[in-house]
Image (cartoon, rainbow, N blue to C red):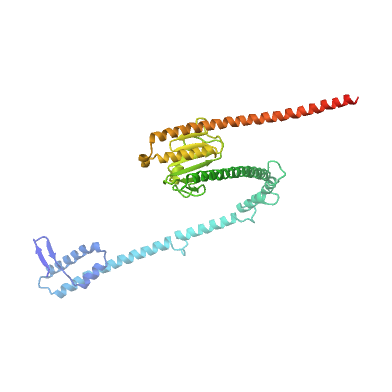
Length: 403
């Protein structure tokens, strides 16, 4: 049930529910924002009718009066909607109906057709003076037979014309081929030289390996391994360390074999390389054996740098280097109780000095041998001259005796 209050001027109705179909029809003909005003108007009309007609007027008369009011309002709304639809239809015909010649769309279509005809007429290549005709004429002059492009291409592609594109291309190709040929010859020469150097290196490694195995056989209980082509602890590609000698007490000596003209010492030179060789082959001492006198002058033919030993020649100095390395390993802290360290260090110092004297003496003998060879060649020449002079003198004597 609705709750109604009034102060004589304003009436409030809460919870009003109306099942009047005429009121629903009235509201459906108007936008929802207009509904409060329409309901207020309907109540006002109904209330006014009740007041003017008396409170004893029957509900049927009130309902009839409300129905007439609602129908009148509905008719007015329908009339307004019909007027709006008619105005929209007339506006559509005036502006957008292509069948009406005076409409905006009809005029636009006629203008577009006129522009289209003018455009295609101007692009007609068969019509003299048109844009398309002039364009085709210019293209014929450029790319047609005997045109500018053909003559320029003929000149550019003529290999007999100096400075032409094809002549320059030919010269560039010939120059590239010559450079390639020279590069191939240089590469072949380098590869041949490298192969010769590699072969010399392997041959020297063979000699060193044979000498090391002979030395190890004299010691007894050693294991010698050629490792120049296998990776080590630093990786599969790490080949540093050519020969490894494992001593009876478990100590390991790695040898790096060199057959080059010059060997650097400091920085990333041979000492650092020997450190890498010891790490790669898990060795405790390292020896570099050089086929020739390739070390710096301060090294000479034999030098000891801690656990790293440098030696020239695969002969006696290699034996000395192996012996020094084995003595150094014997003097390690693990064996300190069994070794007189001071005496051993004194022996190592004497070995180093003797090795240097050996190297110096060998160099002197080599120089003396060279001098002897020169003297021998001179004596041979002198002997030949003496024989010739003797035969000449004997011939003269025989001639005198015959006379």
